[in-house]
Amino acid sequence: MHLLPLTLLFYSSYTLLSVQAGTAKIGESCNQGENRLQAGTFQFWSECDSQAYCGPGGTCVKKGCRKDDFPFGYAPGDHIPDKCPRGQFCPDEEDKCQDLLPVNSDCQLNRDDECEAPPNFKELADTTGRGLNVNGSVCLNSKCMWANKTLGVSCTVENTPYIAYGKGGEFIDIVSRGDCHLGLYCDAATGLCITEKNLGDACTADKEFVWTDLEVYQGLRHVS
Image 1 (cartoon, one colour):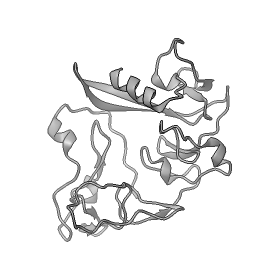
Image 2 (image 1 turned 180 degrees about the vertical axis):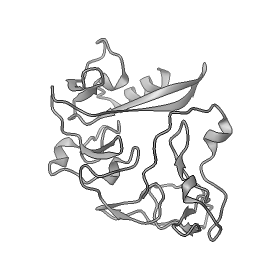
Image 3 (image 1 turned 90 degrees about the vertical axis):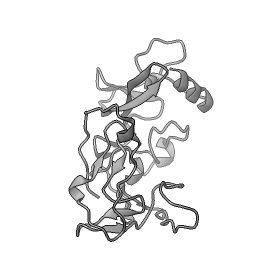
Image 4 (image 1 turned 45 degrees about the vertical axis):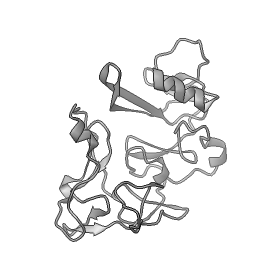
């Protein structure tokens, strides 16, 4: 697993954003230096096609694991790599399963599932479908953390700018995440955990709200 730096360059080309994998097939040459997160989507990309990863020898190798239930790039009848067992994860490169990472370890963007759960994970785990953490662990600014910061305590925030599209065209959608306990959010201005707000309260970001109904949350996100 190789951590890749975030890029703040944005491109409006639909062709660029829609590319999900390279074209080199298993056994063909590749360059690991070309591995990257695509601008705007932050999706992992390599010179190899969807069924291979770029090995250390500069050759595309058949993927050894998968992180998605329904991976892209496989036709009916193709062999699909297995998902990793409990206690392990499949990195973005999908080369092989690795053990979960201890707190403060390096992790990949939005890969909370790479991080080892805290002892009280049942108390901290987000079960709302909002993607706040995985089993009480969160990957922020490329570091594994536990989502256990309490009210008024200093917290860590990560803001990631994605390219999105609406009726008015292209715009930047900033996803802001933190390591506060459930029911709190990390306020970027103060750097402290603050209690989530109720509908009707003044706010500056979606993360500040208490969402008790996932369908309502998704619906409001869709029209916002």
